[in-house]
Length: 274
Image (cartoon, rainbow, N blue to C red):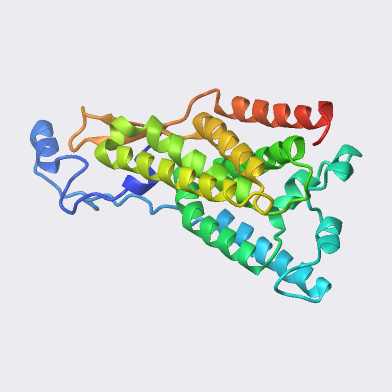
């Protein structure tokens, strides 16, 4: 268990972690100032995993565009060669396509919006969950989106949208689970994230045949489930002054995440694609 959520690390200047005068009086000696009265807490870690994923997406898109002879829209054959979700190939054993498809994009607008969404949601998600849990959430949500698309949509598809919807679900469930500790801010975040998810789903279903809605829904569902397993729980510790936020994780979190991964793979192996 570690103290203070990443986005709640700041302390108002002048607040001591202990009162040096009380310590001196209780020991019967003269007060000596501590070397660092404010004991600065470590800064939040930089979202390195998000930057790596973004970099891979851009490099792979440029490569597929160059091979296709068009930077605006890579050729479908090139995308299939590089790992697009194509049901018949997955059925024949190319299960790696369920993840490789999340790094490919169909045109310049597609990668622009997905990159913007990942840049907007990813850093906050990685700071809240930590790099390891963030990667598990992102990868499993992307896998969940691909599996849903494989089972329910016959069309080839590419894109990081399923994983990004998983981040929406992961952020939403984090703020929902910690709404008491975060107060009005947490409740407002839940409402905002639910609105974002609903609006994007409505846009998706209004563009049938262009957007892989099953991939979005699958990623969102897996993001909520895996997020509930891996999200930190925040509790305000009132016995300390000033009160601090204590962060902990459920003991069963990683086991549940592995169970979700096993279930998704079992669905692909045991059930036929659309």
